[in-house]
Structure formats: C-alpha cells, structure tokens
Image 1: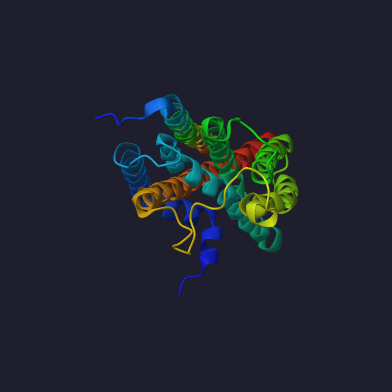
Image 2: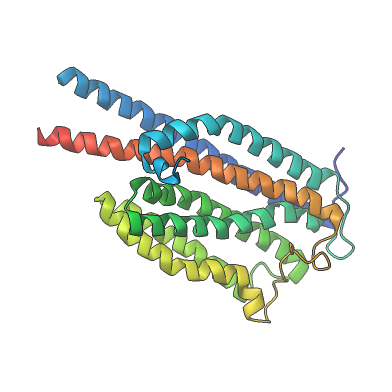
Length: 52
Length: 243
C-alpha cells in the first residue's frame, strides 16, 4: 500500500507529518477557543440577566 | 435583493455562518483527504524530482493560502477603514493565525523539499525572502491586535499594518516574475496549459487546493464567530464594571 519513496522518503514523510500536525493544531485550537468563549459568554449573559 | 452589508450585523453573520459551517467543514475534510491521499499514494514520481514531487500537494496550496489569506485580510481591513463594520475587522483578525500557519507550512515544506533538490534548506531568494517577511508581518499583525486594549484602535492600526504588508503578499506571489534570479522556479499553476504541471499531478493538486481553500473559509467563519462573541463579552464585562 505504501508507495515507494526511495531515497527521499524522509523528506516526503516529514513534510506530510509536520503539515498535517500543524493543520490539526490549528483546527483543534480554533474549535477549543470557540467552545470556551461561547461558554464564558453564556455565563456572563446569565449572570447579568440574574442580577438585572 | 438582499445586500451583502446585512452580514455586517454580528447576529446575522453568526446565524448565517452557523448554517454553512458543518457543510463547509465536511467538504473541506473530504477534499483534503481525497487530494492528499490521491497525491501521496496514487501519483508517480517525477523524472527529475523523484518522490519529492509529492510535497507539491502541501506546499503549493499552503503557499497559495498564505498569500490569499493576507489579501482577504486586506479587503476586510479596507471595509473596516471605509465603512467601520466591526465584523470585517474581526474577520481580518480571525484570518491572521490561519494565514500565519499556512505560511509556516509553506516555508517548512519548501525547506524540506529544497534540501535534496537545491542542496540547501534556505536561500535568500526573492520569493523565499518575501515569504519570510510576510510571515513576520503576520506575527506583527497578531501582536498588535493583542497589545492594544481598545478594539477600535486595534482595528485601525492593524488595518494600516495590513495595507503595508500587502506589498509583501504581492511580492511573494510575483517575486519570481519581478526578479529573474534566485532558486525558486516559476508558478506551478498557470492558465497557460504549456506552463502547467502535468495532468497526472495537476488534478490531485486542484483537489488539495480546494481542500485548503474550504478549510480556510470554514476556519475564518468559526474564528470570526469567536471574535464576535469575545468582543461582546468584553463589552458586557466593561459595562458590568461601570455599574
């Protein structure tokens, strides 16, 4: 299944590994921050509603 | 017909992008997986570059997005400067980390490809140098947003920085044409079929580019929503402190 990469295997595999890892970091960090900010905003809005 | 400016309303922007986000994300994932798997597993070696040609499916789309992310920020910044729509300033802010990450991927994959092909990780070639400067502009842009407390002042100053940085975004794209020197070859994609890469590499590359573009749009939507909510939270907390 694995293609024959020859003497450039290290270069190709490290390019794919690093790039995919960086893309995953970007996506996970964006989703994580989105959820956190959404939750914090909900809490602030609820508190303000409670306190009038 | 509805005006595009209706999306300057933060609530309208969030409601509309919320509907598109799951579809965009799914489409981005499909295109990325198909493009990268096709390119990695099912394309032949190049007669000169060997298997390193497979790096093209990461390097070209990320470099394309690094430049176009900045151009998107430029349009959003101009809208802020002219029309003072907060959503556009926040969209520019949201796009910056994505563009910076795309620049890093382009620089790293370029260096990894350059070592066996050029015999060096790095050269002070016009395109490489302008790309590095573009990355520094991304860092400066994000640092400026983080350093200024007042959102409107931050939007004003970062918009001006974005205008200045656009010179390097354009230089990154056209450096090869401007200066006929350096190691970096011409564009891999061209409207002129004679100059394009061979079809066997071209088709998976197009799918991979589509994946990167869709991922960028999905992330900009998500991160802009986050910036809108964060801005609202800062405003509510400031009002609460005053009472």
